[in-house]
Length: 387
Ligand SMILES: [Mn+2]
Image (cartoon, rainbow, N blue to C red; front, top):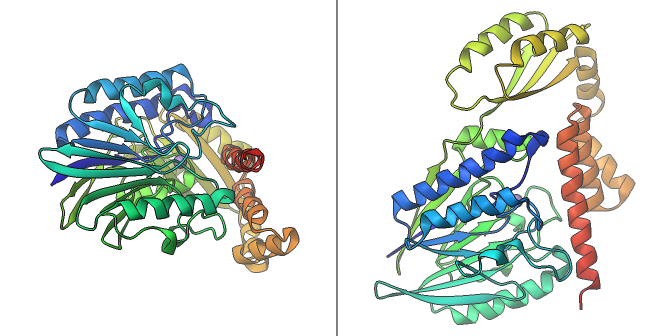
């Protein structure tokens, strides 16, 4: 039996809403992860990509990872694959390389593996860093090579940072179909999907550990429902046991919806519920009603929320607008309309995501969506120009 800690999508260096506190939050969480990994006595640590939010992270992000490694020094062996966010353009050096005397980066150009001997047990660890969709065929080839190297009853781990069709809701952005993944590994340590996901697969268990902080507002529901954090996995020759570890230093993000008619009362009630958080929350407030005095709503929100929360975002919905949307244009219709117009799945999905964010005036979210999309485009360019 060997005990591993599996996590991914830590996005060190990301600064949500351009707030210094939000950058710091991601470093706090990294400290907490290290402490909890030590408590859990994991012998192997696997990071499945997007360790950093960009291939050129700020110095603080390097420092946060250095602190992380210091805490684990002599206690666990650390492995990492690159994600879509921290893979450098062209032939640049990945930021992880700074730590290559202390971590093992797997699969920079092709599938790679290492066999460890832990307390007399052989552990086979394989990994491939992120491949863009355009290079799918190469990725599949690399996976086939790894498949031939694993013996059926060994303790074997495969680390990947890829979107698998079965687990991604947006069709056509996946890089792997579920039937293209070798089935003879015991544990599939996945990154890329920001919500947690566990599935039995082939001989073992496939797991997306999810992001470790709330990166986009569409991650709030998942965080509320099942928490965020990492997995502690006990892998034996026969079976795999996965336990989720939740993090407490994640900054709370709350969605609230208030009726304009009694909005001030509801706001007051809400303020009583947020006193116990260790970190000031981020609030996404919606005020809904007829003939809303927008200026007044803003004023009241400013007056009451400003010092009680780290940051708040508000949207005001006039009831007539809402009726219009519901009656005339269901979300699916808009999506279909965009598909028809662009005749390209990727672009129409991008437009639809943008539409959803901008319809409610969420500029920050729209920026993040646009950045992600542009990053995808640039990657494809690099791939096109690579041999
Ligand atoms: Mn990510």
